[in-house]
Length: 453
Ligand code: UDP
Image (cartoon, rainbow, N blue to C red; front, top):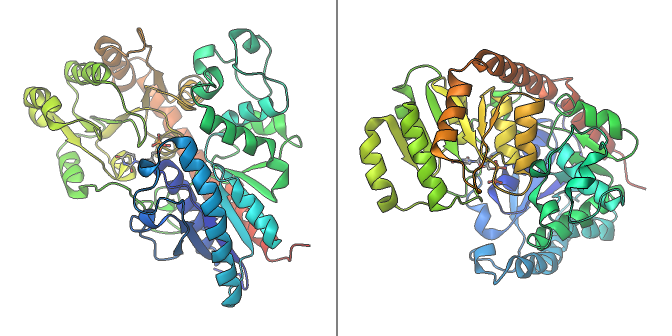
């Protein structure tokens, strides 16, 4: 490991689990290569982060007790984070500059575009990290380029889109089909993808082999570089570091309970079910999934963060030891466990990458945002799983059972398992020393050593 003398990267994090994880992981990867790294995040997030190799400092979103939950709306929250965040980030940089460890570069989550202005103010490097797939980001980028208009209509899909497979209307990110509903997030995303060129680097949590067609089609047209998967290296390349978690959990997990229960189950027999940190499924959908799992006769581990005990009582009694409900778990440890045979997922981008990187076949139950597009890729491009069909917005118990059988024991079981192993291997190669993503990170670090003109 080389000591990158004088280089100090400040990583600015948006305080949601699906954003904290890849940013922390990137910070750790830089630190593992000898770079001094400080993470800046909100005071209430700091206590959830446990990482020895990086320092952590507070910046404020204006809601220091509880963040987003304290704000009257998403718009208010984002506006406050922009104003108070810019000021406190600038103060932090001044503090470092005065203490002999000046900041060379800000790496920021793509939801925090104001961090770019702060970097410009101080004349330091700026790198944006996109936390969606490059394919999804390319759709947003095309809107900025004037090649697509909002709301996207079925007809727009008749023309081929560079580097993307043929997409159906239901494969599009919900932000593009229902822009008015998601205005706050969408306007942020569009601002960012319209300003890619203003950054010194734009990184994406993906890897070239995974989105090869897109990388080829957009080469020289946009500045996005793939540096993922930002999944703890322990699962990919044991040479780099030994973390078995991201080291940042906003919820408490009972580690021993999950692992003990999984240890008692046969090889590749368990269905792991999780809808991530933000999606909440309605009670009707919950019920259908529950009875679909029961009918499958397969053991299952379900992260049911948002459901109250009374709702589960009747069901848990009827499945007994065959099902385990937890409010949160270390998803990576679960996916890596030998008893897990399938992941029923909402297809958030981190969960998608984790499932791919750990070689776990998937049953896709996308909800909103980029999830439908990720599901399309998982089922039809990478072919590591199947996508459930909805009936009046609901995945029925019969549909879930059918999909579970298809992935776990059906005719396509061997093909899906073999594709899952192939992508696991590709993911590992990308982040191993000399791999496509690892090289990009090394190039980035080498450039940071040069002074910005
Ligand atoms: N996660 C976890 N434990 C759980 C459920 C999720 O650690 O019980 C992690 C998961 O590993 C992933 C993140 O939470 O890194 C969720 O991110 P994703 O992009 O999949 O979905 P989001 O929560 O943003 O919708």
